[in-house]
Image (cartoon, rainbow, N blue to C red; front, top):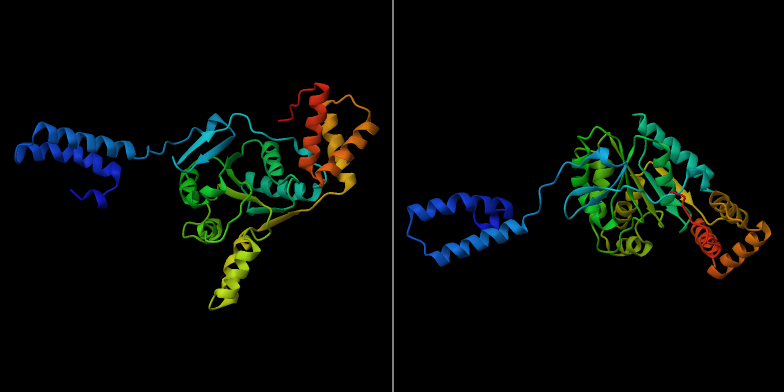
Length: 310
């Protein structure tokens, strides 16, 4: 039997269960305290062993959350999202992402997509709304800190008889992180490549995902600065579809407010709604879909109107 250092905990525990009784029978007699300690050791090893990765029931839901520590997908019964028609001021991005995703759902070639730009302008909301508009697709969310486990997730999804959009919201990397290299390989540079039934969508406030100071540091310290910078910037190049989101105008902001108000059925004078919405944006120092939604929640709460858009 291999040493514990060279053998994974589950394998070592199982081997111990097989070998130790035979060794006790054929070798020197072991005392009861020693056997008790060995049983305790084996129990601890089995406790440390990660649970076997279960095959998920993809019929249980249309959306799932990936847990890297357990290598498991858990169903999300109700997805937090808004209807596609309520996303105002991003018509071009909406149409391009919807068309790209529809082609993928139909089994045609499609591109991984990077949705980048201003905060609160509906990047992740658009992905979830597009998913809802195309029945049959499965949505899988992976957290930014779990990007290094993407190969494990791909292994779970590859044999499944479904098509999946993986969403990583607010994707970015800080100085010293190297998991972006794993992401590059998974997108299209690995030996296996991206499974045909998987598409990867990411949102980020940064166009190149990596911070500028991280790129500049590589430029100043590398033996070949040009190659170092290309290594960093090439990550975003792995996304075939780039969709930029920019700060909205006042008219677009008010269109968002009115759209939400109509969907919820707010009984409020439109002039008063406009005046309060502009004041809200001025106090916040920003105009965006997120600010419009926060304002609507404030008004709906004040008027005692329930908010259900998902």
